[in-house]
Amino acid sequence: MGERHRSILSARSGAALDLQQDDRVHDEEHGEEDGGAVEVALDHRAAADLAATKNVELLIENIDPEENPKYFLTSVAEGFDVVRETGRPNVKFLYDFFHEQIAEGNLIEKLQKSIDLVGLVHIADVPGRHEPGTGEINYPNIFRKLRELNYRRYAAMEFIPTGDTVASLRAARELVAASA
Image (cartoon, rainbow, N blue to C red; front, side, top):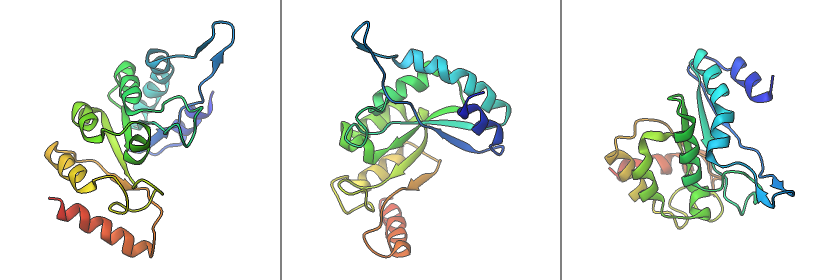
């Protein structure tokens, strides 16, 4: 039994687990990178089926290639493809705006096209992974779009505060409220 399966078995009912992907593997014999969305999805189906027995949701997240150039999923588009190909209702995408802004940008259009596949959003600004409003991402527009798309799930504040942590979290909450 793999590590993913042990994590699922130990998870509480109703939990969500972030399935970190493996690094890309180069096939020396054929001169190509390993697996696409279909191959990864097949790997996740067994985990998803096991998770469903525990009422656990699995989240798939991309990591931008600047942070980890070997990571398998480096774009939101790839992640959404994996979720679609997995074909399990308890497998969702963790949309990390920080990583996608660095990787490819165009955050809102991708969000609109696949909002039904989003299980969680991560909030941090670029550069520096600081609180929203300190960098180049237009979080007021993102928060308005999430509301317009009727997103009713969690938004995780995954940022490094530039000042007092509690004050930064309050400011982030106020930014969300002001974006209504």
